[in-house]
Image 1 (cartoon, rainbow, N blue to C red):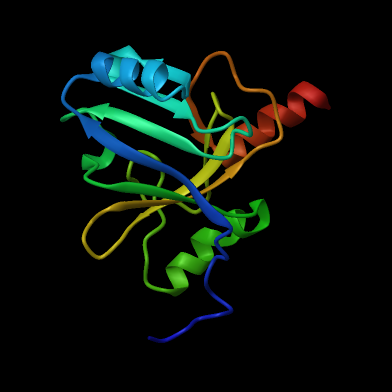
Image 2 (cartoon, rainbow, N blue to C red):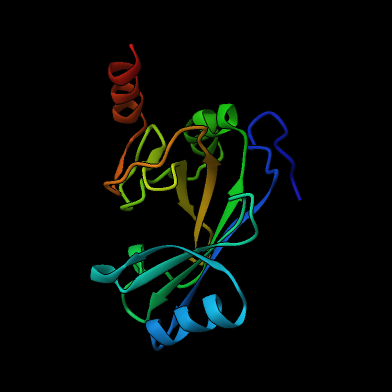
Length: 163
């Protein structure tokens, strides 16, 4: 196996995984009531739910009703990375012949920000088409109006709010 130490993004750990489920409410009840996970967000119009694992907001489980997941999700994992590495990831991925993608599957030069968490992320596909994500939790308050925006739009809005 060839190593590319100057181009790879250092991975700190596994942040999230996602499962497809046949009955979303039954699965919410199971993971919340039987396993004690904290429901972070239910997105009824997408037939999806997200759970924090543990108290630190450093791990997440996503549940998607079959056929409702983004980007034709078959399997999905997100790796926890440092913010500086995440911001550099599009350039590093391209140098390795990998297309950096937005949350919506479009090629990009910058991370997307998932405002309800908030977290910044860059997506890409593995050779089998599985969605892989580099993700960094952001040190900011979650946005009460969940959405996904570009890094530059999020940063611009924060400068406007604080500057």
